[in-house]
Length: 377
Image (cartoon, rainbow, N blue to C red):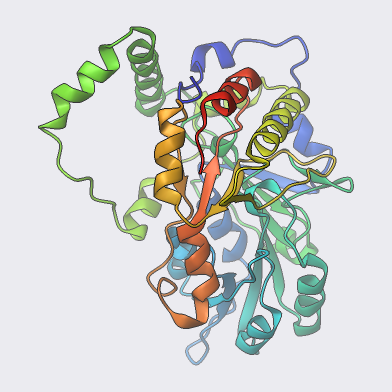
């Protein structure tokens, strides 16, 4: 079933063709450092660039179509986050972006959504150059995506990527430093780097992974267990963006570094690309559901298959019936964006866009089996 989680222990066993994440990144990035999360990496990357004074409040422009907690490191640095509108294509609304730029703009963020290059990136970079501010290349979704011999995340003055969104690991991210000013003024915080030893979080993650495998492996056990707990559960409450940000304040775990150091980037990218193509082919001809990307440029390692539909709840329910798990709309928008008329496109996308899994532990035949049983619309 597509919903079954990958085996952490199996995925960390040595591979004959394994090269590891660090040698892969080293081929493309000028300077980089490991972190527990992309938000911490962003905080450290920007910290040395802040030029705040008693009469000055700097700002950073970020797209409105963005998870709510991404701006928390900006707030910690006492930088004002300013949201700019986006187009249905996920490109920036450049009129709106330029309207929000001023002399106190420290940086502008672009986002490589779902592992694909930011639409309109060349124009965004030209605007950033004209205003003399920094460019943040947010590549949280796809550490292995390479576009025209450039690793996504390294096109800005600084950039970030999230390893835990690619691999079955507790945490892990990378900060890229490209511009001289960013390199010269970078001072890593105590949260930079990798833990010296395995700790409680690593063991907890392993135990959780083993428990999940046990529930999935024994027929009926998972369902019975969920029924047993159903009456005891309360409606889950989502922590505030700040609390979620604080919870990630830890260096990259030893377990994460161990697993990331033994991967085969080429094989992972190949499998994810095959799964992406299978989903797109499967959905062709199904009305009311449209993949955001129908082509897959060379070198791109997709994070998911984002599709737009007018009835996301029904679509998710049907896919779950077919055995597909880990389905949701994306993302959870900031309250400053959600429902505001100037950000109508971002709000609409967050309601309509569903992400379909392509991770490397899914067998392509499992996706093909979904196509045989899918009844949509």
